[in-house]
Every structure is written in structure tokens, then in C-alpha cells.
Length: 97
Image 1: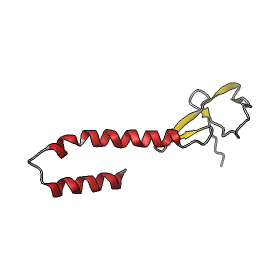
Image 2 (image 1 turned 90 degrees about the horizontal axis):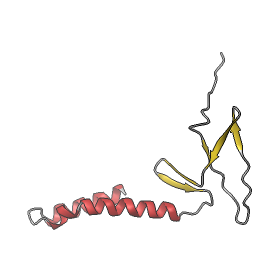
Image 3 (image 1 turned 180 degrees about the vertical axis):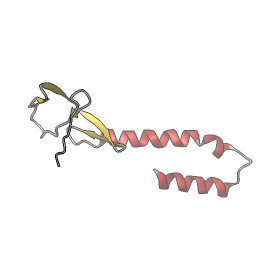
């Protein structure tokens, strides 16, 4: 049984982790076509960067959390919803984030 894998050079990107102080970026090709080299990408919701810095990931997570809490503002300012229900929503949000 023969199994083949076809790689699309147009859809494929490469990111390499570099040591500090090095800037060599060897080119990669697939089927005679160059593959783009990127400095960062998102994989399973996490932001990965070529230098391994976590700042981009932290900023992304803080932005997502701020967005969720901003959308919850009408619930927190509502006087028709009890404090215990509001507290339960907050605990569940922190658990999900």
C-alpha cells in the first residue's frame, strides 16, 4: 500500500526559532516554489513568535479577556440581576479564560 502526501507551497508557511544574535534565515522550497518565512503565527489559539517571546501571547490573552468582560458590562450594571448570579458568571468566565 502506497500513501502519498501532497504539500501546497502556497498554503505552507515556515517559522524558525532563532538564537539571540543570529539572523540567518535559510530559504525553504517545496516542489521548486519558495515557502514563506513568518515571524509569528497562531496555533490552537496560542500566538507563537520566532524569538520565543511570550509578550505577544500575553497581549492576545489580555485582549480576549478584556473583550469578554466588556460584553458582560450590561449584566454587571443591571439592577434586575442578583449579585449572586453576577458572581457566578464572573467565576465561570475566569474558569474559561
